[in-house]
Image 1 (cartoon, rainbow, N blue to C red):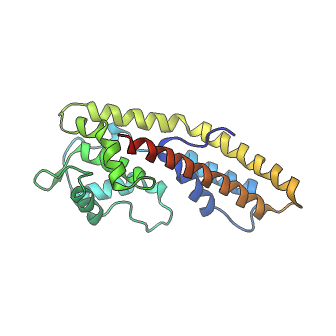
Image 2: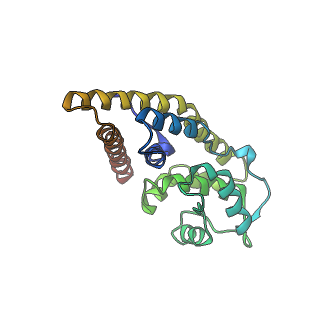
Image 3: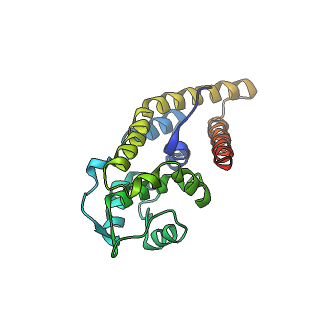
Length: 213
């Protein structure tokens, strides 16, 4: 089987599928709903992030609006004051300057939002130590360029992910058909379990590499 995802979308496709699962829908309809939603997801580009410094409330509102499509429930909060203070306390996020946050803070917080679904705080710090923190205080476009590389990579992978999901569903269907009579719940269970196992192995490999740093 081909690889399902890379980078920040590693967990999102699983809970989107669960979110859109409806006992009255066929698996094909569920997948089509998920694909439509998935194709509308975008990670905000650096050029769309204000160059002016923001107070905490302004920053949390901005990120919550720009990443709204990633919420599982409508009233979920993607970023809170408590989270920001916790990230700063754990040295994941450099402190604000007189209670104001820069464009670099916003980009880093967006990345942390995705990383924290996969990595511990210690591993996020190890990962960011490779490049992010070195670029943070340079006062140039270094971090913006790096951030946009990550955004482009994820955007380029969308079609690959969609194609792979379709293949995985067909693969699960064929395996279940060979096992027993047609049962779409078993088919969906097999499909999702396949993704979960791959996510686990990918997470394990990431942790293995970070432990060597």
